[in-house]
Image (cartoon, rainbow, N blue to C red; front, side, top):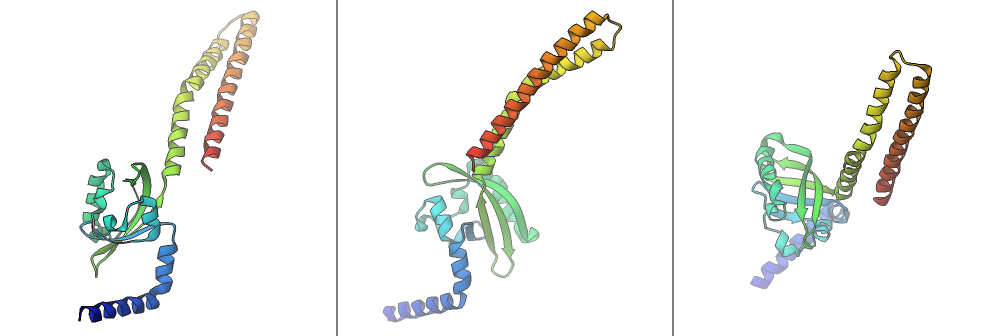
Length: 205
């Protein structure tokens, strides 16, 4: 009797696959992180790409809470979002961090869609780790070089103010020489920023 039931289930699964194989193949072939969770955050489905990205065994993923792999600092915001979804219906560009099986951290950008009938949440996620790293590098470059630009700019403003005063021709020539030197320093700082920015962007390609 048990074998008959198993056979019937196998037949039903095959029929469902045949009816929906185009959708199934699209989902399984997608490079995006696609999953279905219930309103409590428990996984009901996860596609192959998501399994490959996370590195965990399927048994650890299906039926378990999404919060188990979410960075501790991001769990509260996700919990609040899940509570609001039945009202909001859908949310795009939600970002958080996941902890992979190897211990590394991945930045994700999500779209969430609420299904009223099943009370399931359909999610599509994209890995934005590389983009976040580029953004952080550019921010660090800007901070690092800000003082290199601020110094020459301050000097230029001081020289311009001094030249507006009644001074001798000799003094004006000295100020012009100083202005040229400061301007060259500013030009070098700007080129340094451009070169470092281009290098950082190139390395992420």
